[in-house]
Length: 344
Ligand code: 2NL
Image 1 (cartoon, rainbow, N blue to C red):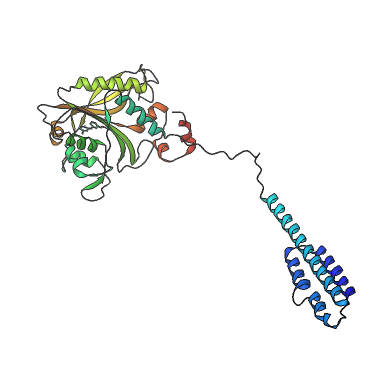
Image 2 (cartoon, protein in one colour):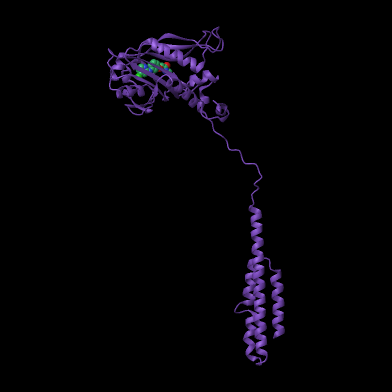
């Protein structure tokens, strides 16, 4: 019996040494140490032994059992450690690799131009006013001296939402809303930047959605010379001290008289080139003295108050300053275009 136990021990040790997985060890544990295993079998046969032999066999059986169990545990720990080391090696991160570059965004050129223009006007005592892009027919047209049958309303190709609601075609409704809030008491001195919408076919110079900045001054004794003085300061600060301005008669339903503002051409210095269409002047905005009807509808007494107003397309100002030839560049999100304005 002792021989049989020694044999079992040798056999188990060999198998455990040969085992290559935790699963194999588990099977060996069941096979050798389990209730139906050979060691248990030996112990069951102990009844036939003499009183002298019995403790020896019992002791040996326990020793074999312990030795095999220890060996299995040891091997199990070793295999688990090896598996962990392998896993860690596989998952290891090379901290010396250079990082992936994170693309840095930049301010949209239109945002920069709006901020620049806002700063110039804030410096002259204006405040910035904003309002809804979905407007009523009243604020977008009626309050600006454009009654329903007015021919200028045909010219305004408008995105209507309902009979009465539309996407604003200019930021003037923000100004008439501001006039109402003043309840007939001046002064009003605001600029209104924002998105506007027109039903145009998009091309190099037209976009169905673009940015506008309008301005409005209403106070007692405002004259055309005030408008001209403000424009002189604005143009020199935006385009440069060497630029000249001129006013040219024009027409808008909401201003009377109306004037177009021209800036001297910087490319040919007045001699005539393609940009200024050989006139030496570039048209930059529309303006005029606020029509008495518009003052009245805004709650101001046109006998006591007067004002001037103007409107400019932001894209045009950006295109002139940076030599951009197509308005669609502003709206197609090509980073090759946008990233050029990183430092503007
Ligand atoms: C243009 C012309 C202009 C105005 C806008 C205005 C607003 C009020 C009263 C009177 Cl509340 N006028 N705005 C005046 C003249 C011209 O815009 O060509 N814009 C791109």
